[in-house]
Length: 100
Image 1 (tube, helix red, strand yellow):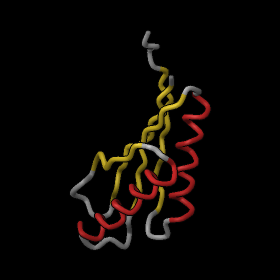
Image 2 (cartoon, rainbow, N blue to C red; image 1 turned 120 degrees about the vertical axis):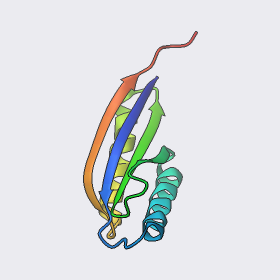
Image 3 (cartoon, helix red, strand yellow; image 1 turned 180 degrees about the vertical axis):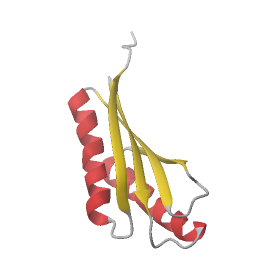
Image 4 (tube, one colour; image 1 turned 30 degrees about the horizontal axis):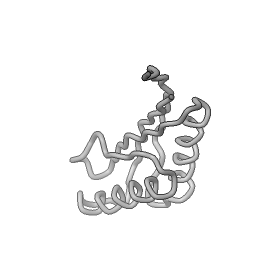
């Protein structure tokens, strides 16, 4: 089993308040969960209205598949969110111990 994790950082230039940011964060998180079946959480910079940092995670029996799931999710955010600019997306695949 493999777990792929991603730290996704977005700049939200149009957000003028935490309320504006929250709307974007909730929309991005919901879309990624629904369309890609991955875990999503805002993990840093919660009190900064121009930055959103997400943690994404996907589990698969193949390392390549887990990484591909997150790469597709990141591309989706980059291509579909006109109100957010991708700053960085760092993906790491972690092999886990086999449970018997």
